[in-house]
Length: 440
Image (cartoon, rainbow, N blue to C red; front, side, top):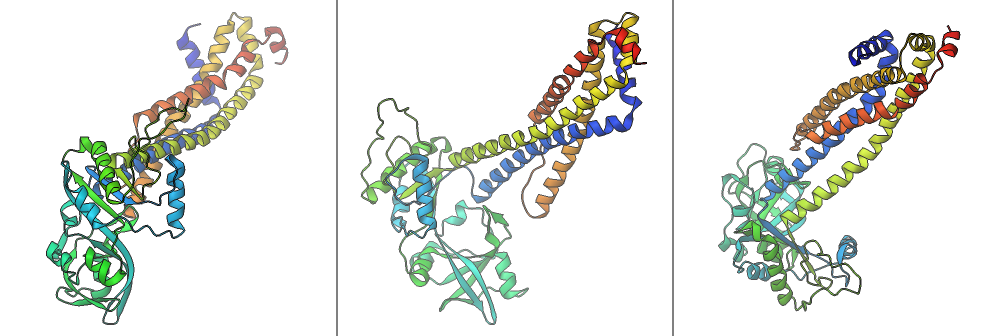
């Protein structure tokens, strides 16, 4: 019997009971749609992270931030440091001098430092708790902040501790409404700050709403408001981003010298694999009270996390696909039971084992492929709605479905069709024609 004839018989059989076929297909649809959604979400998250990094300044940056020295190395050190800082450990060793010294490296183009405090901001009867973003005047040259009207503060104003401020668009509306705030004063604690500019709307970056910030010179915030002389983090812009790792290691050496930290090569015990610790070069960083990270390293870490989450979700999705496949197997058993006499008659008039086997395998594959096509369409539609919803709430979530999502969907359809259809098909093909005809 030709393959075309078998295909026609299989299609007629699938059409014979549309409701039952539809219910069987539903399980496959849910599983395949979930695969598409998971892959699309992974692409959306990666795109969101990339857009956030670009909004923060780009990939040609290295960031240096405070870290609690733990005496340990690798992931254990990072975890313990994070716990220590979360529990209130005060690390006050990173300073503006560190920023200035690192800025002297040959591959550094520009830099800025940051201190952040949360204070009550007052104007007449209006009061709003806001993040006060203390930074150097050079930050506007690196960061994506733009001034809507007015101006940004200067390096001279920073070094002279001038009480001047630039308002984010949201806090400007909250304090001043439609009126022009330029030349007016806000009060932070007991210090009056002259409003010299208003920033353009920027949105949230790395979960921080920059439109709700008050930007002030870093030295003014340090000395007049917070009473500190350290910084929280600093950013350095690179001339050549390809030399980011080398420049980061040079920055570590400079800061260690400033902090009187002895640099020494990593020590390895016999049989221990020599692995380059991400972002730490080949130097022992266990005593470091700072962390230098390139934007590429941050993106690589996020990409690894996203892939791990995607794989975990796919493992969960596989369960629903197995459930759908079991449904296919179950319905094929029902079909064989209902059509036992037909199978016996066909074998009696000369149908071979392979003919019966192929017929029921093709029926199983048709059901799963219908489910796969419908699942792809449903998954694509759901992914688009997720993207639209995320964009509605201000997230730069790009709608994208990678090609591998379709390959995986097709592979699952084939595996489900063959894997869960082969046993019922073999059972049908092995029926004795005389026994089958007796059931008529």
